[in-house]
Length: 235
Image (cartoon, rainbow, N blue to C red; front, side, top):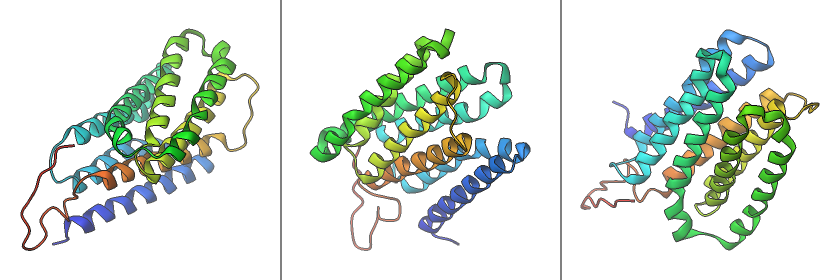
């Protein structure tokens, strides 16, 4: 019977392969394969998280909430094409709020001055993109404004965790910026924009979750070492 750590690593490999297949399907215009693989991202990351977390905690609950919202953004837009943009924006707005809430305690405890200094310009990038894309957002403008604020906040807070969460937050910012230009900036033309959006999103999401797993006081495979007592720490 495989160990829990082996299952955890196998899930990471499965996630990576799913991402490669998805991006390849976009590049080769295989729409059915693209539509099939995208809803798998969040459930695989949920499984990654649950195979690592030795107990329930506030952090795990918030991350799971974020992944459920991300799944809705990835999946429900495909089922409701007439409101795909609205569903995607609202779904990922919810995910960003959950992730920001999960990152707040770590930012307060372990914030690194250099990372925070580098994260400050994120707000300027988001504001600039919002101003540029405001005319094209139309009726979605209030939701896009809320999304921009949540995105800047999450990216900033991600700098206080570790290098993985910081990199994940940065890639999330890049992915959302590319998508916003695709959707709302008239005349914007970026080569391979769809592939870049999905690649930065999936890698950023993975790095964020991997960073949060690393921040857990214990993982399931280290929770009970031989001769040691089990200590549960609520985060």
